[in-house]
Length: 94
Image (cartoon, rainbow, N blue to C red):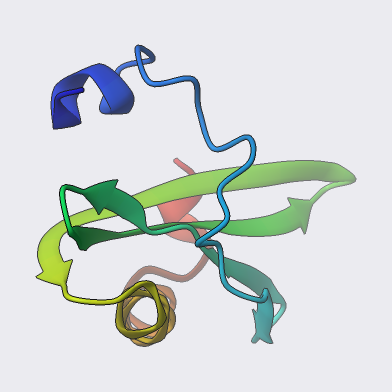
């Protein structure tokens, strides 16, 4: 299945993603790595969530970076998400 089908809803979503890493709290945000399998490699992907005004806001993080293992993609996702949080803060939910 193509990257675009998964990205735009043709891939069945994240349900059952065995590659998902453990969620990490960072400055009030929750980062959850969810790498996307691309053949024998993994694309950097995940979510950044935060409760804002009693409502849970979610930002999907998908990058072009490809890694040979899900663990490496998970670690890179956490690093990238922390960078996005530092640069944009709550602005990622606009």
